[in-house]
Length: 187
Image 1 (tube, rainbow, N blue to C red):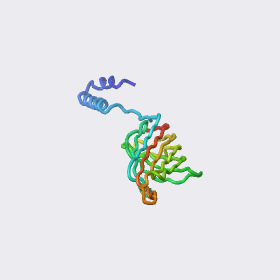
Image 2: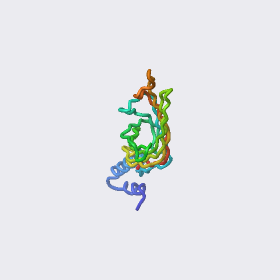
Image 3: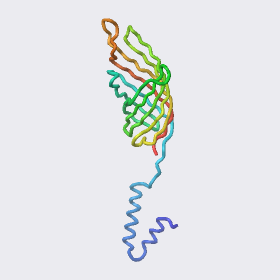
Image 4: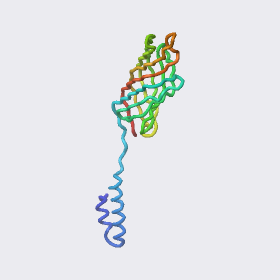
């Protein structure tokens, strides 16, 4: 097989010389401007997610919490809780959530344990959570994403003080969760 530039030089001789050179020049210019085709590669590495929230809280309408992602999956966006329920053992839970980021969505399943303490003097519940997460699905650039790891953090739920103690309805929520592990994103 002849080199491309050698072939172009050979084709430029004889009849139709001007047309062949112009076509070859246009093809070569196009390749240089657009770049040569490259195969996409997946990025694998350490993954961190940080989920935070501070604001009003209504358990029947969970808030969108802020997410900051660093690693193969990256960006700032928000978390939307899809489902949450009790786990198979006492003080355990299972949840499905999505992280909505600028380059796509990432769906995670999580399971873990929770330990809670209630302070009747400050009308505050402190809930410590730990567990594991796994990426179940994704969209856009995260369509084929995979990953897993562990998480830990806390939720602090504030209740209003009433004349008889603390209200039964939560008023405010503060969340601080850290997820660490590994992930692969891209194709």
